[in-house]
Amino acid sequence: MFFEDRRDAGRQLAARLGHLKGAEVVVLGLPRGGVPVAAEVAEALGAPLDVCLVRKLGVPFQPELGMGAIGEGSVRVINEDVVRTARVTPEEVAEVEAHERVVLESRAWHYRGGREPVGLEGRTVLVVDDGVATGSTARAACQIARARGAARIVLAVPVAPHDWTARLGADADELVSPYTPRDFFAIGQFYADFSQTDDDEVVACLEEAVARPVSSGRTALRSAVPEDREVHVDAGLVVLRGQLTVPEGAAGVVLFAHGSGSSRRSPRNRFVAAGLNRAGLGTLLFDLLTEEEEVDRATVFDTGLLARRLAEATGWLSGQPETDGLAVGYFGASTGAAAALRAAAEPGARIAAVVSRGGRPDLAGPLLPAVTAPTLLIVGGHDRLVLDLNREAQAQLRCENRLAVVPGATHLFEEPGALEKVTDLARDWFSDHMAPVPHAG
Image (cartoon, rainbow, N blue to C red; front, side, top):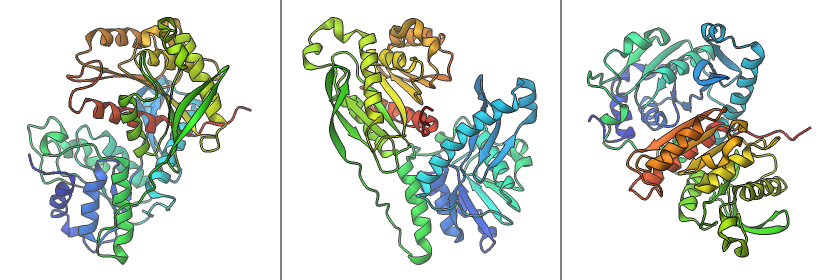
């Protein structure tokens, strides 16, 4: 391996970029992992640091196929060949762009805290990531920077495949990488520490860069810790106890639907919720059943009832001052996943995203094709029965969806690092799909 961590990679990369010092350079880091690398480069060059926010525009019926990308300042890059071949109409392109634009603007606000992006017009733009694998994101970033008025683009990464210049040379004026090995399988193989970069670290890097001209020291991020509020959720004829946590500036709020035999105190759900809170997402952990109902096994497995409770809790949440107008997502575990999907399938539900952890989506039965919310199914690699059930259920989904298998994990994700992986997957899925939901007219 070549690097201790991303900061070390940034220092090594900066040593290859001395020829840019003193030039009119702006350093752009690709979030999340590229920003700590870019922070070291920017400090070494005495250059301003910013994030390069790019959102892929996926073909509506095949979201993984990119038909273009957007950046800040109404910048858009469209691949006309893909649009023409896939027969995507201008109206469909506009609809996808409108959704991704809201997500992009929400990310920009979260990372910068309201500051304007650094101007690129007429300047040399240094695009930095923690490495290049396929290069698709780096290419889009270079294209976006060019569209924003950059006079010259340098793409710099600590490590890349040996043939990367042939694949990316047309998108940048200069390519820099200190290591280009032939035995390249994944970026992480060249780092001793390649742990996930979270949003807080991205924000901290940007805050440090802003403070640098007036202070030689590093400025630590001081962000308010969101407070938990004990709540009583009105759900039809019953009142359910819960815990509501909404960070300042939250982009959305996630309701947790626990599995059979569990409750709002589920340690696994609380672990995931804490990770979502750190990423700026609100959470509602609540009991789906009253104490009297919990002793009835038939009620515990009544996914129809659980789905109604979840929908009623969603209605209650929309009336709370700190969550009014926020996008809503569902996180379901075990039988709670079926309840989440059933509730999301209801007409007019307007759910932004659904995540299932070791769930039983098959119990949602014939309602699965009616789910429109982007759905992520997370299953342990050793949870073979549930994995098969999730594959069968995924085949019935017609919405954007993904099945993520956590290698070596069993049903409860008790193995070292397994629940952390679940949290990372859920955080990224919700962050990528949550945007404020307009009120019904």
